[in-house]
Image 1: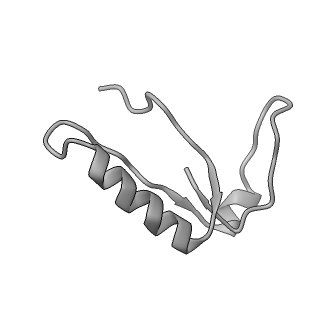
Image 2: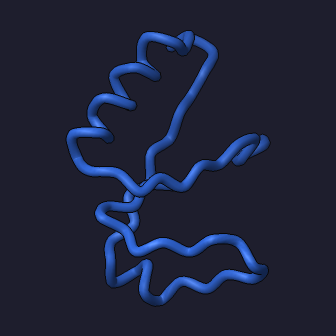
Length: 64
């Protein structure tokens, strides 16, 4: 089973997260689609690693 067709990192507030989640809920088919939200705590984010020259941001709240 494929786990990550698309992955997005978002630098957002809790209010923005709720808005995005509600919007996605209006767009998906609950019988066939699945959208997962993973919140990454600052402690875990500080321990994360990346490769490449992509932009790194200082998060408010981070969701992947």
